[in-house]
Image: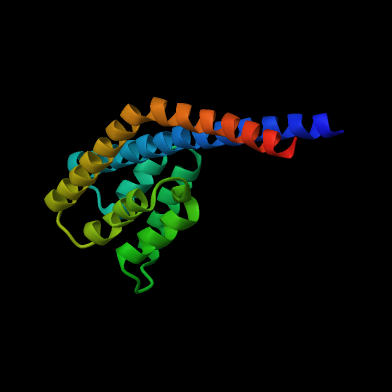
Length: 171
């Protein structure tokens, strides 16, 4: 019975390390999808000259799952305009529909600040704001990609070693 418990502890420690390692990969994928969203939105605003509502609807068609839902809901709420600012609508819809809890708080606030900067500006300034955010997220992706293998290995190793330490302590 004791041996089975120790084996389970080893497996659970290893599993925790693998989970944390996979979270880094998920974070990278979310940031890359946000960049894609920004690029499509910037293209719609720059090339077609569409209003924000129309641009959000057009981009929604090209985005997968929860990102599509976010874009559609934001566009619908913009059309209703119940006396709420664009920034509030954007933030509320993003927090409700996007997996922003899986990225760092700083990255989340960086993305959510876009709503405050888009709603009232002319087309040129909106494109400039989207470009700035795109560059910021690109820099974060680059940094994360450089550190990713090392951090993943660290998490995996710590999971295994933590499981082994706990197993030895309980032996």
